[in-house]
Length: 346
Image (tube, rainbow, N blue to C red):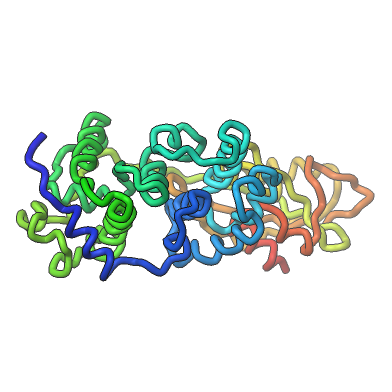
């Protein structure tokens, strides 16, 4: 392993003065609250998480209450945050902590990472924040900071290079006063990546690591991290069957347990308009095509085509599902575009 710079002291000092120290999950060493924040913050900005975090805690104040809840209710409180597999894993993880660990979080990252939805980096964040364990994290922000400081040019699309970066991240950790240094160091790297060492136009002039940073010395920090494999995107079209009865109720189904919007409530989905129309036969209900819209997911462009149908009670139910009124929608887990669509129905 090549020479590793000493950055821990500089990161800890910078974080104490310039880092983010006001967030609610920073005022506790309760692993439940820290774990919840870490899961919510995956793929989601802090400003969005704040309101959800408080509402979620008000309903599920501890791991026991979360474990005892129905999955549908957990998804309802998660609705709007996206990446719903996080909520399902959160629920399963809570159940395992209660059933297998007596309601206590494991205090080392290796054991914690064996639970659903907790990868190595999230486990390291929880145990460094709550138990001051000397373990690294490598979320997207920290990976960017460390590859720039180290001048780490190896392709992170290869597992062996990812392992090498983990080893170097371990070597950079604080070695003394771990009780206070580990939480502040971990938070400091996150804060640097979020506010200073940004993907584009990093503010190197105010970075506490600029002196040691190989990327800055080389003059091209934006080339890091190096990853050759790119996400493959594809487009998909859904026709949404918006059945409304005479009382304004809408027929909704639970999505399958895997795939897009898994476990959430949604109008029946068809891959072709003709299939949707065939499912309604032989009833003479008129179909009205509402304005379609695009919903962008991580790997997919989802083109949604709502088709509104006023349905008579005597026709029965053409597809599986249950009828829900507007007063029911808030307690159901739904994706943001579906919730907006229902609220804006003509």
